[in-house]
Image (cartoon, rainbow, N blue to C red; front, side):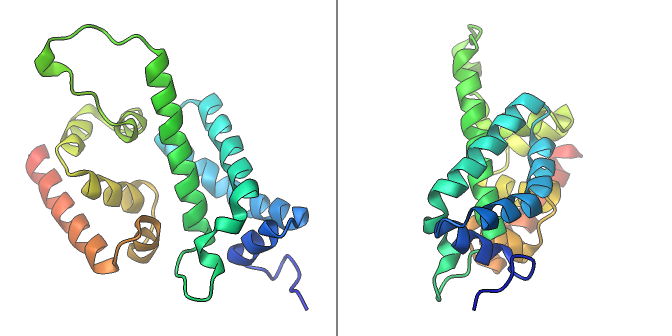
Length: 185
């Protein structure tokens, strides 16, 4: 017999959503949307853009719940990590679309390196010096710092989110912090 929705964890709610259970999807949204909204707002100050990303994310969840990696017996992904991955990709896509619509100023060739979409999202929320220091970090180190510092994920959650071992998360975080200290001193 199926557990009630109140007793179901998020992984089970995604599995039920994959089976077409609208009530499970509604419950998943009720539980996760405040958290997801908060995480997206940390990366983007544009409320309209965040609202669009939220809508696109939950539409993708409804359509792709059957592809959730945590649904098999031998998987380690969490529904919350899967949900955040979808949302983060949608946010990056939204920044790329916006960047394509904006006219880029003509600059000398040496200055044509544009920041990644993730960096654009972060730049509205942190100081200029920190932004510049983050740009010199390898992308893997930036991902770890964003997950752990900005999003408040634990080492284990970051490991699940990024699909790398916990020891890799720890070493990337350590190297990134050292590099940031040097860049900001």
